[in-house]
Image (cartoon, rainbow, N blue to C red; front, side, top):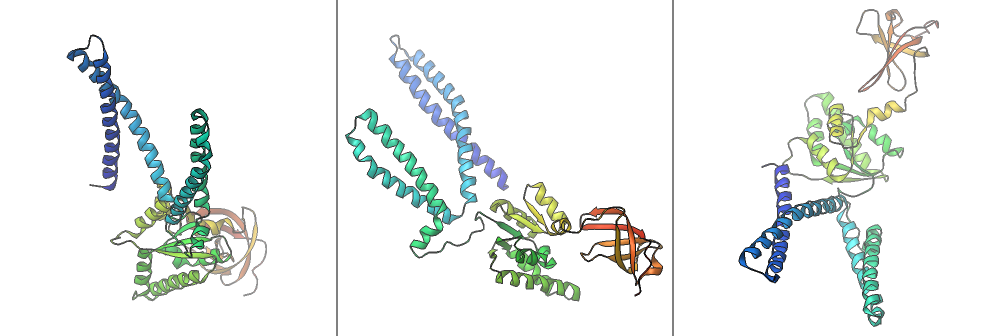
Amino acid sequence: MTEDSRTARLRGRVVEGVRLIFMALLGAVGYQLGAARIDANDRNTVLYVFLGAACGYVLGGVFGRLTLEAVSGLERELHRRPAAQIAGGVVGLIVGLIIAVLLSVPLVFLPTFYGWPSAFFLFIVLGSLGTRVGQDKHEDIFALVGMKPRVSARATGDLHVLDTSALIDGRVADLVETGFISGTLLVHEGVLRELQAIADSSDPQRRTRGRRGLDVLVELQKSPLVQIQLVEEAGVVDVDAALVRLARESGASLITIDHNLALVAEALRVPVAQVNTLASRFRTPVSAGDELQVRLVREGRDAGQAVGYLDDGTMVVVEEATEAIGSQVGVRVRNVIQTTTGRMIFATLGATAPAAS
């Protein structure tokens, strides 16, 4: 049985439980009404019980669904908040209720019509205020008793889940250093296993990439701008699915350069920070007709094409320029294509003559 089916069955039981309670209560009310009639008899009493139970069945279904929505909303809110913040709210609630009790003592001497509503108002206001203050100041509350709350994977604030590809790419460290990314970085243990497997590969290129990812992780741990939180989860086979689930449950954004993983996360309404997309947004804008200087380094895929690169890594494909390979040339932009991994510029040789190599 899947998790969704178990959840649906549990929700159905909650609704049916509330419905049964309403049927029992209104059935009892019907019995009392039927027995109180002057012409009461067994047939009338049974009819009243039936009518009361029928009303309870309808009203119980309505109130059961409302109760389920309220409980689900509270569950989502508690799931989103860290344990330290919940504990701080409980402490604040207790303190608020104690203050309300002390302030309610003078109200005992007032007439019942004024005293009880005033006391009820104090309990509601001070209880709610204590809860809010306790949640907002939970770190200070723990500091008073010499405790420091542990950072949770479900902590609120700037939360980011790191993908293996983002660590191997390495630019996430630059984003952290410049302050574009801050807060808590969640690293799933499956990502560590993948990095270790790549670093231990027999392929020299894969081994270099894996070690670069581990070096980036060590660099992030030394940064004062972020806090690394290792998330342990046993029995994980599909690491990508685990990362999307972790980001969804903790309310974090997923940092990746894997386009397919980003599409899956976006389909599940998980915020995605694609490093490639962010980098492309900060590249110098180029449009058709602009003139650029580029060094051609190799032949292109089609005949006559030569390829060069701008300082930001953008590929420039120049038509009819194979003779200028190895030279710095002036080109005129003909077309700019945005791809999932960046942009490509197609150009032709400009009026500027090739510069000396």
